[in-house]
Length: 205
Image (cartoon, rainbow, N blue to C red; front, top):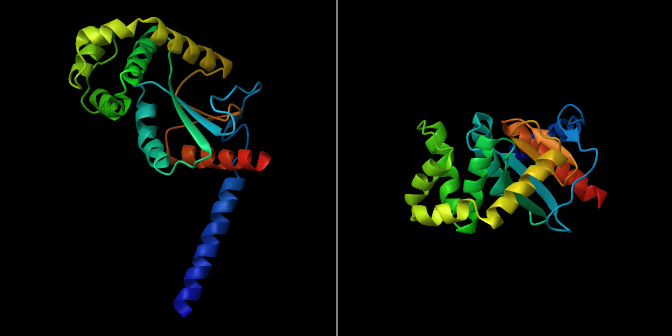
């Protein structure tokens, strides 16, 4: 009985501590308020949109935290990855990302590509190197190349650029919550702030 009481007290203290920590997240310090909120992809759901670049070390560091968070994705949340295409180098990886989506192999190549670049030091940033990487996953180079500069892929890259400009992003990673808030960083605090803002949006409904 004594152990149960102590356990209950510890649980209660943890809950209070967690609430206090969440309450300390403030605009201008832990996240940025978007002056002109963006439009979300799925109405009725709270959108969490992550802007990233495969060559970004901070994005690679954040990825495990995002992966852990995704395993517990709430049903009322829609998660969207958006490859940043804010310069010519980033745009090439953005095109590769959307090719992977079009071929329905994004889940297969997403983490391996991150690790190939950051753990193995491979320079997979242009069309040729990406095409060669995709071959390992059963995609002929000719197929990759036919999609790479296609109209549908170009349209998606253009939309990614428009979104980045709308949110006035200057770097990545950047996680936008419901088109209203931007969270930046590369550690576990990012998902804590994201969860806080998701709850804030739930209460606002």
